[in-house]
Length: 348
Image (cartoon, rainbow, N blue to C red):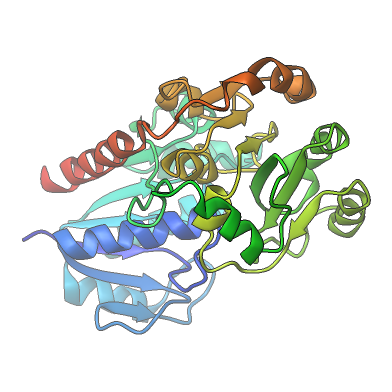
């Protein structure tokens, strides 16, 4: 069995935002299919998880010792901060510590890189990289980094359609939401970059917008307090707490909406859209990241629009909401992710 060392900053719950979910689900898969050891700064107690206190670059005797003793065939690194300059430097450290190991870099979104940093990256570039972001994929192609685009993972044991549609009202009662309203939900960080103000016109038209904020929202998110007040004043309901059974919010919704445009405000393939589709909920979204590339219309369940035209497009498609949307490509995307990563590890 191949030996794999998995490195990321966070393996600890709650798993309530895209990067943490991806890290955790990838850990579970690698743990099932390989002889796995994991290194992280924050995690949960398990015999093959090493929680370490090290400097920002992971350059320490402890990390070096773990790599030397385990002698992995492959190292899979998925940084929580994605493709920052520091992430490339950490890759160089891992390469130095494990010169015989195959290094695999997975980055979920692009990050700003200064001109002088780009020059250095050309000399310390990863041997193989994966991303769901077309923007990052294009950058890597330009700097001659060998890479592939991949979709992301959705836990289909959790995110699935309601067997009994009447249970939707029960869920609305549970979360103290209007039973007879047309509920449009959005999940994610409650910050300015997610374009949430454009949901206000939908609220003003009589829909009930419900925004679920991640408990992992960065504390430096610009304008969070002011934005929250503005959304609440319009009548939008905000659930800014950790919700253990987040799938129930999708299941009680009539529509999921994704208004994000700014390229660094979400990972390259938003998991919330995949989760909504796995729950059989139709989605109205911008042409963000690789959504259109991998999902297309997802058997008629995904509608694309510029965010300023959400209201117009909603009026056009609302008569279709009585259709069933349970069929989805999400399962196929899971298979594609696993196949791509496994092939990369197994060929070494």
